[in-house]
Length: 481
Image (cartoon, rainbow, N blue to C red; front, side, top):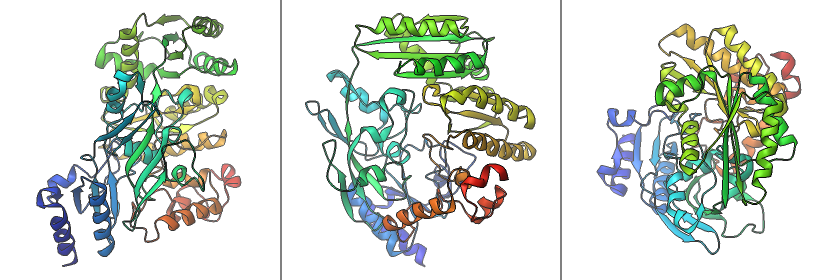
């Protein structure tokens, strides 16, 4: 009876056509872009305004029902899964660019605006929106804010939190508030910064004021081919160590090259062990000097060849190749999990060797395509979910990769978030006290726990999975694994 009344209240608010209850329709919303994690919602509703989102949240509270905001569904950590059932609030229809202020270099957008479409909308003014996740053709600004997304150009331009000035937010009780504003800094606590990256557990962003970045005067984009992964990794550290900060510095290994060539025929050498894509941008004067210094570094580290994009068409082709990588992995295996750790750049050779050893140990293929410049690695764990034995080995692979990241002084996610995928591994980097402080903060924003429940925080089973007692501090974890 309670469930029937919930559906009735939602239909009265939104109309029957904006409320999905059919099992087949709901199955579309059971996972994000990491289909290994699935959970079926009780209902999906489509909101068209901040007030509607607020009203939906109030209905959810009246019926003590969990609710989760969903954008493009491109997340990779299960962050928007309805693990306790409840309501998924789809924000795709809130896709309007409400204001573009070129003079003050900002735009006001709704959460369903697709990342790339914002840059295209301001291109004629000579501006763009800098954060550029690989999924930027489909991911939305609201989701980017929830996960604090990055992308290849994070190295120079930073992640989402560096480009959000203010937000309108529907709080977990339905109250509508504003955080930040239209200027760089506002008085008081930085609640704007706290909201970004909270993975939808603090509230639902329904409007954002974002910075616009002036397009660079010039670009220089190059591709370097290496016969040895260590040489490519060491070249990355040397470039940054020499005070050169490219706009992007990306690496792809031989498995990724193979997949891209089979799928798209970009013309990459199949016998290369690694490829680096490096892009400089900015003022044209002096750029050639930096380019020459990078060439010298590549030569010092035994690059087989270096090729340059002669024009913008070739530059776009290189980035198309990089951003098509994930779409090509179906050539290698039926399923894959994209891991997302961060390690100090100087440890890249060691970490990549350890990943290779883990691959060999468990007989699970692992491809690597990642943001090498800031040490944000993305080991792609390839498997067949129909094979129970492979799935069990994949669990061990994921655990060991993230453990390596923690052991070298890194962390277990750089841009994909914790969600459900990595909640078991939080004790690798946080003590019980650390985690309790985060829970306390979450409870202030979300006291009922109805807003995107079952995410981020480890359970007793998580500690058991890692072979730890729940009160074990992170200082002792390395010796216990």
